[in-house]
Length: 255
Image 1 (cartoon, rainbow, N blue to C red):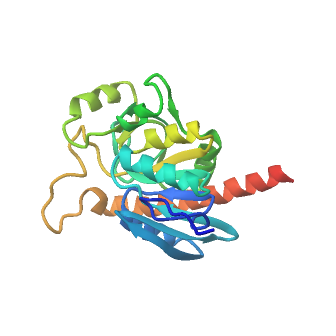
Image 2: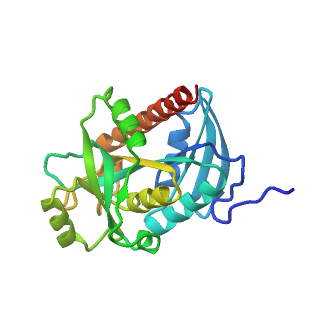
């Protein structure tokens, strides 16, 4: 029988591991794969870049989701059809709290579903919650970090621009940060009985007008800020360590 390919990520059964790290930015896939012991570029199609490799004896993949929940949903749907079981979003986020600074790290426990895509899968009353086992593994791995790590709920929004008043409202009820993919990743994982978590590098604060926005050539703001690039490297390290923890935990339960 011929290998059947997924139409958007251009991968088939055998191309990806059980564990998949999900950055938004295609270029971050290569950064993640540098943490693998060995890796292969499996696919690069329509902005969805996939690398697969090994972390010790664990097969791990990284696949970009692009920006927003619609494309993230496509990636999770297609990856789940070819054997992926555990997803960790490795992304960036804008702080909604004054005590969460650029270069800090947020581990998301849940996401406000202020997006449209997740509502096609689940009624608005349904929660988008990160898997406890994945979240615990991320938190354990983060304990070794020298960076400030925050644990709690985030907001997933479809609108990068023009949503300031809503963000102020979510800030007042103590949502930690805003990003654009977690809610649909968590929702799909729940529906499909998979595992999903998220770790996010803080690249600014939209309410304060700090971070990602217009800049002069050569300026280092947003994701170009050295604090953010260092935080991205650290969140990748944490995610890889969490995968090791999850696999070891699975092996001990199988004995």
